[in-house]
Amino acid sequence: MLSVEEALSRILKAFDTLAPETVSLNDGLGRVLASDLKARLTQPPADVSAMDGYAVRASDLQKLPAELQVVGEAPAGGCYPKELLAGQAVRIFTGGPVPAGADTIIIQENTQQADKLVLIKEGEKPGRYIRPAGLDFKEGETGLEKGTLLTARDLALAAAMNHPWLEVYRKPRVAILATGDEVVLPGQNVGPNQIISSNTTALMAFVRECGGEPISLGIAPDDRDALARLARGAEGADLLLTTGGASVGDHDLIRSVLGEQGLELDFWRIAMRPGKPLIFGKLGKTPMIGLPGNPVSTLVCAYIFARPALKKMTGLDPYQQQTEKAVLETSLEANDKRQDYLRASLTRNKDGQLSVTPFQRQDSSMLNLLRQANCLVIRPPFAPAAEKAEEVDIIRL
Ligand SMILES: Nc1nc2c(c(=O)[nH]1)N[C@H]1C(S)=C(S)[C@@H](COP(=O)(O)OP(=O)(O)OC[C@H]3O[C@@H](n4cnc5c(N)ncnc54)[C@H](O)[C@@H]3O)O[C@H]1N2
Ligand code: MOO
Image 1 (tube, rainbow, N blue to C red):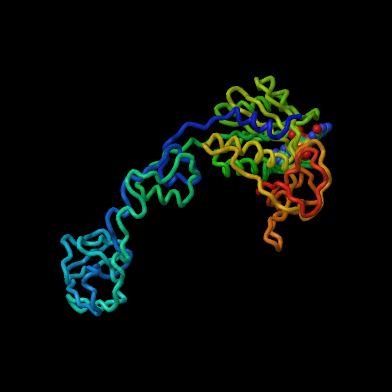
Image 2: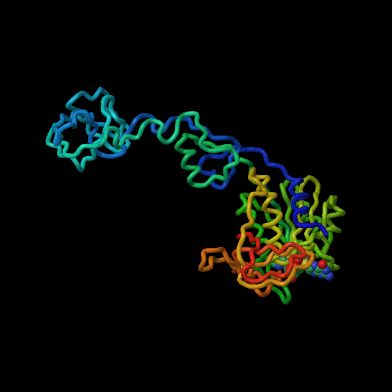
């Protein structure tokens, strides 16, 4: 059976970064920049005041208190058009441009104005409360780099640099096909021995989390024609994710039916738990990851294999992640040949170390435990037994 590393590297070979597209600034959240973003202006464009008060010449404040003549105003967005002369002050407001000749701002709390005169009661060091032109950024400087996953802070900077449009990588379109006679959608009538397709919901949300656009193709019953028909809906998608029908049972039809439909199988079955029957191949032009039906296997395999593929398509580093070290709170038995991903709870112990408690039961049908887990402990193939307080690799969920 293929190792997890080998499987991931074979999967990633099948994907490229998608073409760029232009979106409006306010639709940029969570998208990845496809080109560097340079400032289209200088910010602030001129020296401006950081406070409400008076723009003065520091040389006028040798002796305090000092009385100055108020010759005009400089609000944000306005300006005092002349040069400030000796003995003069300009009433200025936060963001207002500092007039030529002025070199210091006195905050209004330290002054007293009466008519056209202002009494400066306390001085300041020359240059105080002046934001020089270009303090934040200068025209032509690169503010955001290609490959940035855009956050609210990034978008604020893009806006300030005067970019109403952004060039980002296209969102991957991901078709999701659940399979199984026993599987019904949430809210449908649930017959005896049926199960609700939590996998469809999980994968739709997972794809969105990864910056993709999910398309549900519904649920294919264990019927060859129906499965073939529904799978054709994946044409034009950047990735097809199927769930269920990946194993060896008589009703596990994915490989054989999609094989007839032209699936070029790259691999089937890997040395991983959960996730052993994972399938990877190409259906027409669409890469396809066949996820095992058990709900935990579906999501864990999506995190380990589909997420890096989606990252690569959206212009992010697929290998950037993921593992951290934590100390075990319980002992673990030796592992067998499959790389194990144990659902676990991660906290900090009294020494401030990350500490991890793998759950007692690791059945791949138990969604409730997956929900309670906040990390996975990675146990490599044939890892020897581990004692409490030993270090292990974890991936946060
Ligand atoms: N003889 C063997 N049996 C099994 C093996 C094996 O190697 N030899 N592998 C086991 C492993 S490991 C896994 S994982 C499962 C996965 O098998 P399939 O991908 O074929 O999954 P199904 O049989 O279709 O379903 C398994 C389980 O999951 C439920 N399911 C399916 N779809 C959904 C859905 N959309 N939402 C929620 N739950 C779903 C389904 O009802 C089953 O209970 O095979 C083992 N068997
Ligand atoms: O490996 Mo299966 O995915 O155990 O449940």
